[in-house]
Length: 424
Image 1 (cartoon, rainbow, N blue to C red):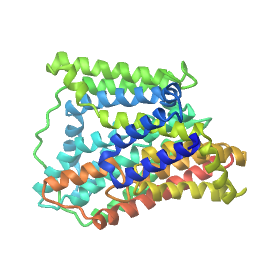
Image 2: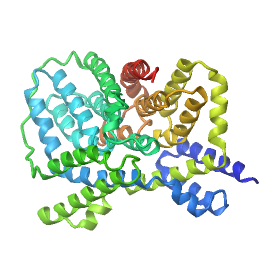
Image 3: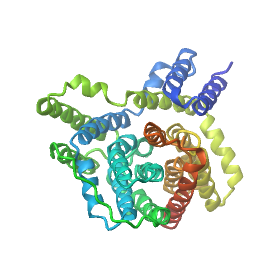
């Protein structure tokens, strides 16, 4: 069997298994990537080069500092303060969702949900409310804002690594408002949806403050990390290594601080990191590298380009809403990793700035996962927390909130990107 055929077979089979066996995604990705190497589709050297080590450094380093940040209890303390100052339960929930989004712009989505969920559950128990809708609101808010910055979520890291975008490029890129503003506009539109869902909860909210901030040092480390990433673009204009190194240095510093202050073993901190997702990302990089090296990405791009013709708006719309639909059922990381080179190639064939297609792709892939309970890892974690409390989230329970939220957020961000970048 030819190398190109083998590459496609392994790639398609892996992606089908991601859908059928989502809890085994890491085993599938690693196994498929090993098969790609063993069968000679690509060499070990090509596989090693296919992994974006800068992105891996950003991911692992950010995980480490996020874990210590969570242990400091600053986010949970902030949530309590916000709830107690809100004029009603409705506004308390909206503020919690907004806080979730803010944290998620700098901390991985699953970690964000684990930070905020206990406050939401405590509030629900005090007011004798079903926490289901509140938890769904928190989960989808974390998924939305994860796309706003370079370090918010793996899809953003993938885009940054592929296009050499720096932290500041996510805010302003080539002198124009970038993906950050598109996401924030989507967040405002989606908050309106959440308001209509929770508007009947008019009682005054107050919970007993129990959270104590253990230390402000992790918060300071996170702020300094963000500043360092923003400044790194002046020294590493190709986004090739510096951001990953900076994140790893700060992650190690956070773990060392945790050991000396809280007497927590560094090995324990390292073991607690999300190595499952780390290995999954590495496997995906190799799989996508194999189909790219054997020419399939170019063939897919040519096929989509022939459908689109010279209609840029149709091409942009097609990419965004295909991404929304697919990401509602398939993990957005492997989908985005596969589609980034396709979008770039389509833009080249249409002779346009690729930012339009790339930003649209990120929006669709990141937000589409909010439609269903299986569309993103944070959704699965949130539903799992509810199940432990005795609440089973049915598919339709999630969709009735996730779908209008997603349509509002995607619609606003989609229009913003089009009007800002269509003539770039």
